[in-house]
Amino acid sequence: MTRSAAQEPAGAVDQPVRYEIAGRIARVTINRPEARNAINPAVRRALIEAFADASVNPDVWLVILTGAGDRAFCAGGDLKKNDENERQGKRHVVPMTGPDKNDYETVLECYKPKIAALNGHAFGGGLELALSCDIRVASETARFGAGEIKLGWHGGAGNTQLLPRLVGYGKAMEMVLTGDLIDAAEARADGLVQRLVPDTELEATTEALAERIAANAPIAAVLAKHLVRMSESTAVDVGLRWENDLFAYCFTTADAAEGRAAFTEKRQPVFRGE
Image (cartoon, rainbow, N blue to C red; front, side, top):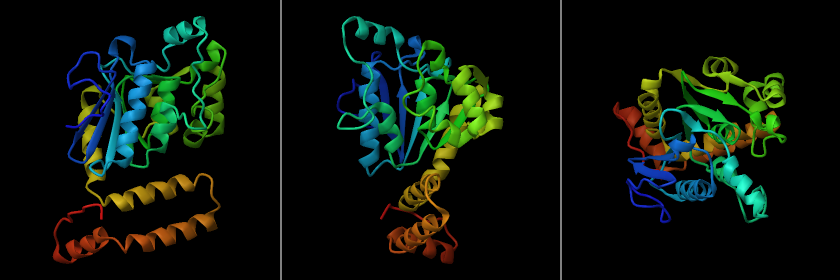
């Protein structure tokens, strides 16, 4: 296991985010179960650090993001802390541009494949963290909501931009404008969640999926992810040219040579990210 430099030793009860690496998979766990894993400044800083490391760490081929406990994946921003900042005249909105990236942007821009293991409710900013991942696996008791409108604002890190790309214009409008919650079954039917499992099977299902993805060639996985994301905003002809160029690039890698050799020799390939 490795951890980021700013974090407490493993097992510390006040560790805001646990960052662990086992094999090729990093696990990032928001660790405030007593506050439904709400995001306070310490969590924000630790998330940024964890995903910044995962992005450049050659030992990490995939990241799992989850929350501690069984009540919530993440309840969004810590409103109590924000209220305290307001009383002290501090700004609590972190800009999406410029040198000060926020936690949502750092998660979204991590170019390694990311799986959100949704062990409970994902509200507001918690939903935006889930949307920042590539695949979402949810427990049957999880619920989801973009409830910011009920408090006087709208989402500021993806609920108006990422949600429509997953669930469609009409469903996104319904969720964003009403602020109402949906259960896990509805989230699965709408495409927000890719897999829905009993609570007791969430960890095993997520780990098995992560292992299957991490067993593949990491360079090809990163490029494939990039191309799929491009498809949301790129004309088909342009996207196809990019796909073909990066397809050709894959064949210059040692992993592609290993894949061909393994196929010929009827064995499992051993990829090295080279």
